[in-house]
Length: 144
Image (cartoon, rainbow, N blue to C red; front, side, top):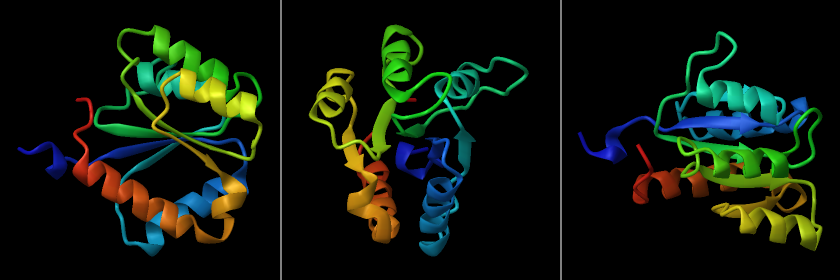
């Protein structure tokens, strides 16, 4: 089976319910049936990725959509943690955040994110963001 034929899972690491719903609506609007798993902070996301705390491990291929400003474990700490984990270090991560701060963007790219997207730039067009992601995983070979 070609990797492009496999269903790509989405791990949405987002504590804001409104933003999470906007992403889910974007998938629905485009009739994409990719399963979306949500974590509200980095600790919950790690549990999904590692299969901890009675969670089933999220299987590959997957793409992570990561907010930076979250309680418990924020996005940058989460990024540093997965980049140090031999089993997770090749995870594909797109930052989806409210932060336009240069230091946040630089810190995220130092942790090898695939892209840094400011929510206010896509607020009214989450559909375009989802279309871009759909094209991305159809063309790029993801880690399996």
